[in-house]
Image (tube, rainbow, N blue to C red):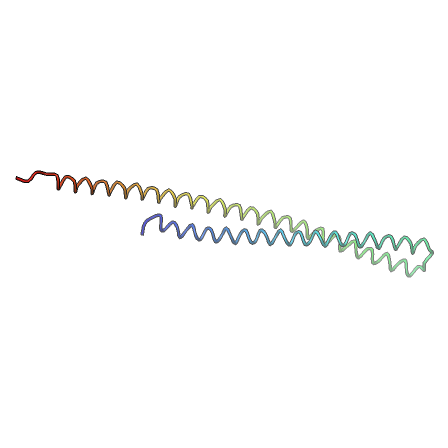
Length: 146
């Protein structure tokens, strides 16, 4: 088996790794987008709830009702904080997955270039071998026979 054929197997494995890395990167991006969307929804919901809290507060609602509103707003703020932390973690994961994908892409390209170079060298060697054989045949048949 030639070096280029052996190298082709290595290139194929590197390509599969690159594809896996690309899938992981895409999945991490989707999860981050979903987390951002949820944060936006939580913030909108909290803002709407704050408006209703202000209306209840200005109408002179019972103390128990106001405390209930306050507790729920506190819970919403905690959920928003937790979602912000999830987004920060998601950003770190996306960056890590992107680096891994870029590394596997670069590795596959280098290996592919090496495999192409090996093919070129083998082609040159084959051409030289054919040329030598032709020259030998030409010499053999061009010798005068006495």
